[in-house]
Image (tube, rainbow, N blue to C red):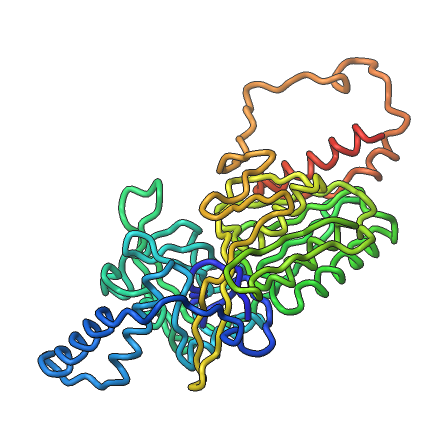
Length: 431
């Protein structure tokens, strides 16, 4: 499997997304010949340390545990996304990409020795408990996180469904740490949701990129068209906020739905297998109708591929906040013991050649993080309107106007409302 993901999919879970792509056969067969001899002095030093631990450590340690720890440390020393997966971890990872797993429902990484929440997954225990993207977890059930490996922290957060865990977190803007109790559960992620915002304007939310996301996305577009009385949509809001990533092929499929030609994404690495190019097929599912893509700091990996492709082709307006900035590809290489390693093997680039690694996608329209509240009416002052004037003329089209009044939409999602208003503005200018 090839991951274009970000941190250890901790989805508290069993490890969730990345940007992955199935690989047939072993990539090890394609590795290039390493020039030069083995570093004998370094191997000698390793052997000496191994022997000293075996002979002098306060408790007896098995050869298996020492060698497995050495493998974990070797991968952890490369980058934040390369990691060792034992048999259980590998099973959890595969379950995560199918959209079902056990745990809390958050995607995490490490930052300054603490567990950093990349994003909570929609409709999961962590999401419902109020965990937010950017939170730093400093304690797990009163056990300090500092000094733990990400894998160790994940193992503590996983557990039997129905059991509780308390996360102590630091959140920007909060004067003191917050304690959030979360009940573990078997989590089923609904990858794609859709609804009509107003007649002619559709909304699709992608929570993660899974095996069937591409097909489900096309079904969602068909459903929106059906709800719009089989008329073409005037515009679409594609919501990728807090989407941590997922399968590369799913991201390509979603991008391809709106593009009829050109490059979608390409990857570059040292081995031949890591050099891939994905191009769009003819036919735009929306026939050129405007699109606004919503992103934020929790939009990573596969989400950034979609946003980057549509932005480079000027097919959509990207709106929101700077995205996460995960621009590397991980390949899952199985071993003979039922486990695997997740190894960074390439970087991915948008159609114009941009690498968003550690940078992210910069929105075309930047929205500050705000909270909208409805103000109370001032009972002491009321504006006088035309209808209050004596002998004002009646509106002959009043009944018709009332009938055409658009359905009321949610007023507490500022970015969504801003996206819808932008789509309307674009359509006014296109007339």
